[in-house]
Image (cartoon, rainbow, N blue to C red; front, side, top):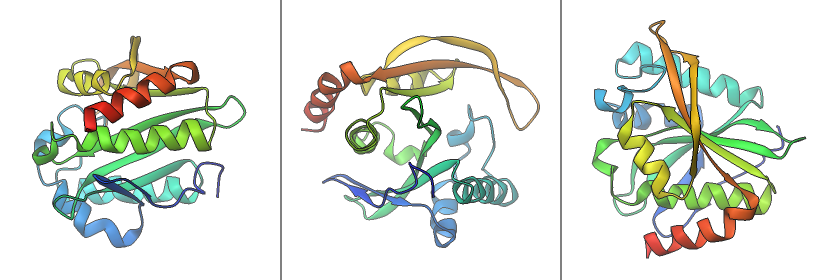
Length: 195
């Protein structure tokens, strides 16, 4: 287990983040059953084979200590809404990325994303003591870029040909970050949005 993967269940009044395990496959597959989720993702998960590949890869990265994936439960509906992860972590430089996040479209704009980000950001800044937390998305994914801005992250720029998608095309990624000095204000911003 890595420095990051020691985390257990994180929860608040709106969301519960449970470390992903094999037993979550079916519920996550049902939540992923909408092609809109994967329109801008570097991978596809909207077929049984593609989702199985994506899920198994995530579990393998978790076992190697390279990713800390969570299943997102919406407390209002008591349903699995999607997933999010802590990725690209570097303990020596105290930095981490919150990414590989997707929610079923029924939860878009519901406040669930903000609830999850408050849990993850609090864990990263207050338990792991990171100094930099980053998020990224496809430069053309305006919905995601807007959502990242709403949680208080600052736009840094676009990295060209940052990723190769599963179909072989190149993706430019828009990068955002929050640094430790900004965290108290971001935390209050998120709490106000949720209240």
